[in-house]
Image (cartoon, rainbow, N blue to C red):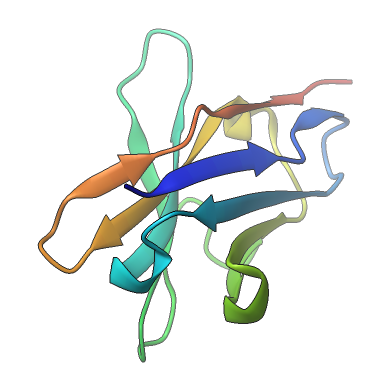
Length: 116
């Protein structure tokens, strides 16, 4: 069973930056992809970015050019560097790990707030 723990959320002004981290443990060798999703109040959870084994990262159009996903396999950690944050980026951000049979594991979420 894969466990995911996110950190790095907080309050930032528009135009600011944050870096989210997600540490995976337990069953990490079964992970084929990791990614980030977000959910704003009253909205459905939406995909933000993903990185699959051996492939280039993919991004939602709304964050392309501003967010960067990366993975440090030695630390079992995936990062989301978020630059030029906008008020519409405010949400709870969830880390996701997909195993080789397609099952998705989720973290508990970390809050990102963007406000002047």
